[in-house]
Image (cartoon, rainbow, N blue to C red; front, side):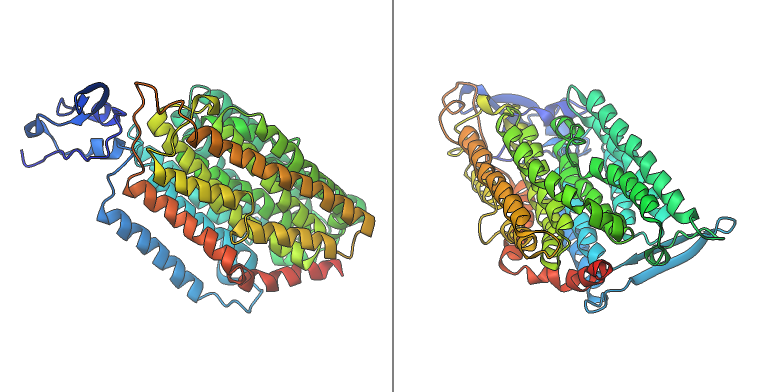
Length: 528
């Protein structure tokens, strides 16, 4: 045979390649005379059929030049996209407008403004890296990648929709891929978590649909679904409050906002880590995007009424989720609760109704999208090696896995808002937005800032606790069955690709503000 199998020196003994091989080419042999530690060997390379399933199954070192080219091509397309976007224009740009259903006057209408540009670029970036992270998936891998791209399409469509009914269709489109990714490639309780996810999100979408139909049909001989026309539409205060509550329920589930958050830890605890990257990096941000795009921009009077309650919920959420995170044994669930805590800053920024606070919330969308995705990726790579998720069973990983330890440490510092990282700038601006807001009394601003500061104190406690339990000590290092190998080029490439923008935005946040500031001024002009 012309095919051959090459065994790399970073084999971690996970046996995934042996299980994936359709022939008997591969087998596990003792490493360096130690029967407790085994690595893959290919004694019968002449029988190799060249299917490459072993390479796809390996969680470590099979990174080809095509992967680099693919990522660079995607990034170059994003640069071209940004080049054609005019930063000084807060209006909708790069529009596509086609009449879809003539009877209902329904348009296939897409466009981008300064608010949607950041989430769109974040979605493309994280989806590309999540696809690389999913390389070890071998069972129904084509379907897995198809569902990831279908989810990507729904997310991009949500961020760029300029028709409110099209927004709903794209909002629903990404639910089915997430459900299938959870139920087919999840953990032992995958069906429970997938069912809980779909019940929460689909149930809340009923309120979204009712609100959309009500807004489009009110006080007009011809229904309007255009976002631009709906921006100038006025409603009676009571009706606007009803619409606002319906949209708030839908977006509070997706964000999530307590007490509608319980689906998230279960979902993250069972999902494959590449799916977790998309959930934490993008899906949660769709709820915050909807709050600004619909609740804040289209229903400004109702938002002024409800903003104090949003501020209260946001501050409570930061403390509650941070405290709950401390009590989680499961690594992925602890990171999930930390995501809920960080989403509290988004709620505070949206509720502040201030230029600084809303810009900080938009920056937090981008910042936490990178940090959350990276933390779940590193948690998944650790699970590939240890097959452990409970923190009290881990320990001693720093010495044999220095690369993973270094990257995890840096991202943990970014999560706790260390100066020089993107999270620091975002959270600082949200706090400044609260203090400088003209809507609230001084005593109210002091109380909210004080409560939020308590939550910020809890953040380094659970972040540093993860580092201590995973990487320090000798619990696993001294056991006879322990064998650790550091991250390979593929894993290191993904981690560094996320780490670079986290540091870059922390050093130069004006890159984000350059395309969001003008749109923020337009949104806040409705509150004058």
